[in-house]
Length: 405
Ligand code: HEM
Image (cartoon, rainbow, N blue to C red; front, side, top):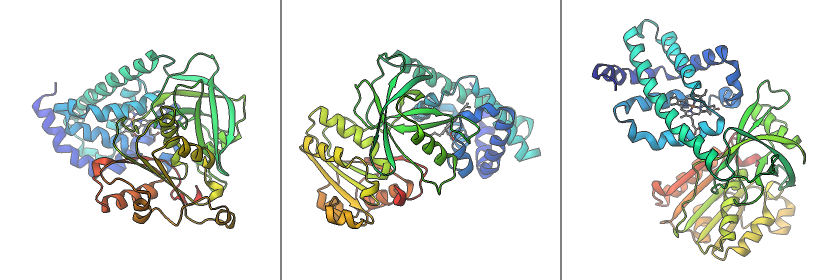
């Protein structure tokens, strides 16, 4: 347990650290990767370059520190972050390294303001927070390894089928090289792949939603190719996956993730933009396998028919799911789309589109797609009186618009 004096120092310094958050975070990553370049294999270089999520780690340490006396209250958040850590292969031995460089960065940035007393208070607090994560992650590693077909760390999978779903999205069917069973998952969860793309100095971990129902002999992921104008490592890695063929192998961590639709009878509205439809494909395939009679409104937004993935599979799902209302909105349909009439509305998802589809404002809402899409949908729903606690969303990077999807 921390002494009262230590707690007082922590609480008094959190706001100071937050003010200097950006500088400390930047210095932290500089120090971390200088001393441990091998960790570049674990962290997402794209996020580093774009500054996205870069602050998440340090901010979470500060947020946890505020609750240092009652860490129990933040265990649900620790579990959520721990699930991501587990999929990335974060181990107990990594925690002292991160701690050393976070404290070192505080010293570098705050200079004489970071007194020995302050630093040792933070060292103690970090130790307690890190232990909470290590304990939660130990359970998650054990659970992943113990469930039937589960495994710890990475497992080799072979690509056994590859299907073109649109001009930019392909599905990859993955089966384990050891030919043993594979763990079940919940629709909405993702697989983490470790990929070593040519032109990128380090292996990179990337998460891809599972797009088919569980309990099959394979996993299916559906990956969007970021096109040539995108030279970020994110683009390089998606293009690398698109260069793989049937027979190639990839290293995969067991399914993880919290974007899970609860199994009950509440009406659902699913809003997807571009490749954001993948977790919903998994959910609807599962619902169809179970002959579910749940009321579902699914509205999908795409630029046009060329980049509209799973159009045929979606039609089949609409036939199998008797209570599914499916609508497709094309931002800028092509002449061919106009002729084939494969869309229900032109432009964006609006209140009228939602109303016409018969959405239930009191039901549950799940949104998945690029950030601007999710922001727009979130505002639209809250304006329509949907309660915030009924809206769940999953960010799908790195595109900054649904334009290219
Ligand atoms: C992601 C917190 C320790 C590696 C994250 C996220 C948070 C976080 C909040 C974002 C989660 C999300 O995107 O859903 C923490 C805290 C730590 C800690 C509070 C210490 C108490 C570590 C350690 C490692 C690590 C020891 C391993 C060296 C990562 C990686 C990501 C991540 C690789 C993914 C983000 C990216 O690649 O940019 N962490 N973390 N974390 N964490 Fe940690």
